[in-house]
Image (cartoon, rainbow, N blue to C red; front, side):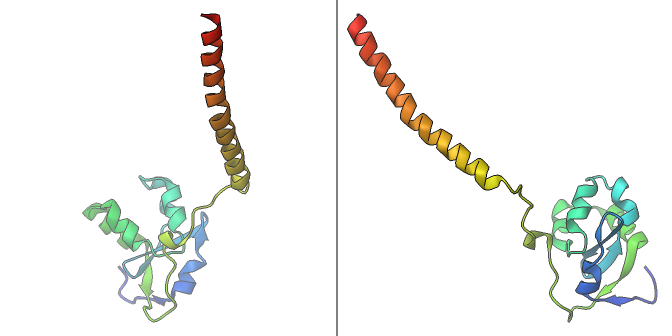
Length: 134
């Protein structure tokens, strides 16, 4: 870690949110993990989902060991000013969903309703037909 810590706001970190400039906040410290994206054992998607956000809770939940914690020193950028605007956490960001999700749900619901009507009707038809032919 650097002796002369730089103090950053959440807003300053939040702009570093893409594959070419990826910073994360872990336990009130900012880390530039851009060069670690390809090497991250969990894949770069995990870090990109946390880019520009506070990933402290997720970092702790995964159970990173002492080796991972020591590696953080290599990527350290600065301390987070706790009085700055509240951070966005990964959990605050809703997952991206396809635009046509409503159409898919409507289609699925229509098919289910159609089957709920047709299957009993087919069973009734088979029962009546079997009754007449026996």
